[in-house]
Structures are given as C-alpha cells and as structure tokens.
Length: 124
Image (cartoon, rainbow, N blue to C red):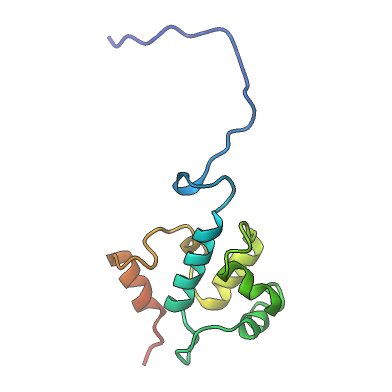
C-alpha cells in the first residue's frame, strides 16, 4: 500500500497564481514574442493573391475590429497583450486557428509548421 505524506490542516492562500508562456513574461505573451509571432503568421498566412496583408486590408477584413492604425503596433512590439478579440479577428481574417498565436511550432520549420504552410496555400 502506498504511503502518502501527512495532510496539513493549515490552509493558506497566497493570492492568484501568475503564469507565463515560455517563462518569459507575465501576461498573455511578451512584446518580442508577439512581434515575432505576428511576422511569422503574416509570412505563412498570406492573402489569396499571395501578397502579405496590409493594415488597410486587415482593417477591412475584420470589419474594423483591427484598425489600420493598430496593425503596425504588434509588429513593432508596442503591444504586449493585444487581447483575445483582436487576436481572434486577425486569425479569422487571415485564415488560421486562433490557437496558432500560442503554437510554438508555427514558423519554426517543424512538420506542424510545414503542414500549416501547406494548408494556407490557395488551391490551384
């Protein structure tokens, strides 16, 4: 029979736990990670004509959720936490799953990344 350590009757709450991705920054993603990830996604998930997305095109494709003036900020690392609504709108407009923002294999050349690139290519 397994032996377990004795249970302490004392209860303590030290406040909310703060977790970070990659052990780098509290919050959703650190500034450089957002900038690098957005650049990778812009390179992988291009428009149907093969060109990279512009701020104006993303503004129109997201019905203004991601304004043209906002577009450059995550690319330059000026926004540390763009918020789920904007991340989801960008993902929907560009044609990738929102989870790709958090997928470390996107843009690193792994089989998962190569599959994402292949799926993003227009049929034809």
